[in-house]
Image (cartoon, rainbow, N blue to C red):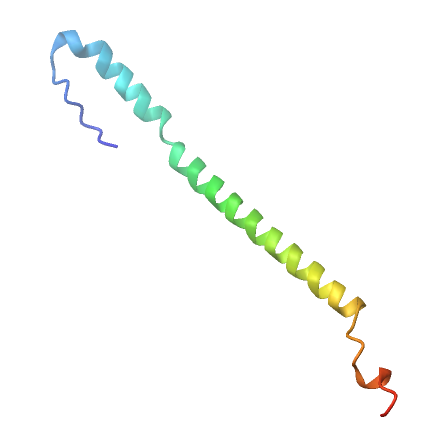
Length: 75
């Protein structure tokens, strides 16, 4: 955001200038909050994908295919 306002140095604009300065001070943590939220959402998406993949791999280990060597009758 720009810090320079277009209000100028007019005495009638003094309340607006104070309000704009207060608004800029309140916006200081907004970028940090957006970055943190993006990071949390990305991390949660990765954890969900990891959970699904681990569940699938665990199921595959618990239920091996029936055509392995130890199950063959001709081996």
